[in-house]
Image (cartoon, rainbow, N blue to C red):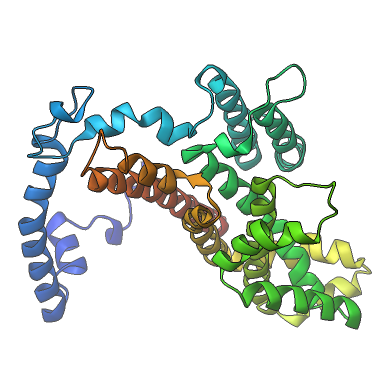
Length: 357
């Protein structure tokens, strides 16, 4: 067995010296940071775990010396599903299971062709999941989206925004670099219009102003309007991220493609876009993470996402004074999802940078 290079066989003391005590300034920062952690971590873990209450069903079962996780346990179903009827929760679980399988197959290719799974996950599966969740078809009882909430709504909005903003953003970026003046002008107007307003304004307009312009006999679901608003908003930012990657491609690449007599779509598919998207993986991930956290703004249009449902639970007179536990729980869920997206992004970057031996 070949031994690893000397640079990879650094001892623990060598690693500490190289990464934490390389310079006097690094040493000072390391010592100060260690002292701060020693001061903060013990009381934090005492509140979170050692003095916390996990058993019980009411606030009286908590002695309030630590966190009252009984509150989260008793409200977990509502935090996860909102006000979705309890006897119909299997529809939510089934829909998310199928979507999860589609995402897994699209990313890994372990269940067949990735392109086929990607097409299904971005078209057929979400539409089918919507009808299963909404009901009023195939014998399912109707569940209005006003009863949806919690983590369920957060994941739905995030999935739609993440899944559809990337292809739409790529199309907008290509259109903005097009040689056709009209197409370039329209894409520029679209991108700058959506980037010029905050998301909270987009959600407010989709909920209050947009229905005014619809025919009197035509109504669109509030959640659908919010989904379209989030999608267009995220795609405008995504278009600029992708355009930055397109501008990083040397002109010689396109000239070589033209010399091979490749069509425009062949050139973009096989040469330009694979390189451009690899350059902007961190930027794409940043848009995804920002979009996930911005889903909390849907509370402005009276939709109970994860944060909104916890805030409503905090106002319950049976559970007063437990806002801290709710916000810590919500923050932990968001951190886990965002950290997972970040690590997956890093794994893609490492795979893209692998060189043949």
